[in-house]
View 1 (spheres, rainbow, N blue to C red):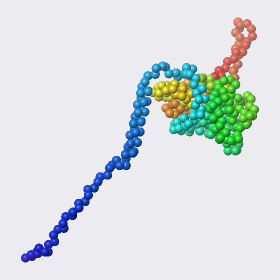
View 2 (view 1 turned 180 degrees about the horizontal axis):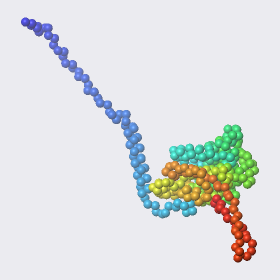
View 3 (view 1 turned 90 degrees about the vertical axis):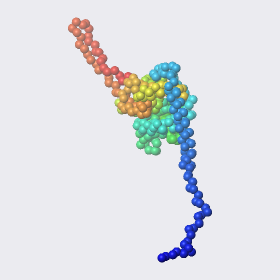
Length: 333
């Protein structure tokens, strides 16, 4: 029989006097407080802006909104007042909406003797492929004539050109209303702006960007451009904005059209498809963006066909000699 002695049995170790501290749970929002704060502020601002838009769009207009150019007030003088701040006010919007990219693409299409009307502050100047751009006579644009009604805008464009191409006299600057008779000169004989004109000749390319919205008679303007561009091979290149393809979108344009016109000098709710149709020019290309409110339009002037002469025989019972009767197609206008 095995007998255990008490001395051979080891007593259990005494309990520790210090118990382990309980683990603290980390704050799940410790590193998210600032992002949540900014997110809340952004959401609040966005909600307020959406509410503001809803209230303004739901508010009925107290007078009919003019859509036709003939019923819209002339706001073109506004450009003199906003000339110095115009670029800074539209820069980010045009870049965000891709308008700057479209300007670049449009200017690259210009060639030969080029005329730009509604020149503005010269936002297309840096995109042209001028013959003198790289010091070599290899560019597509041989001569350039710029026209604008606003002397303040045109002066800024002239300063831009001087900064881009110092010492170059390759651009003529004309102040005046494009549609007025005698304002647009013929192309120059060479790139020197003091050179004589090519009397009787016309331009290879006419460019206008965001101009049909600010003139009093856009149809008359297009007809005028048709008179100064070469028939058939010449091109009129337009980048414009106007009515879109959806009625709700046009409703927004109409609601804010008058305020926008007073602020920026242009009516953005004109029916450009109708304007082009009434001009009598032939449509070559038409592309739209932004719900149909941004237009890329390429036009040409159809070649005029001389009237055909048709002689009808005199009936036996008629007295006198036969006279020719001119029968032919109507002109492009």
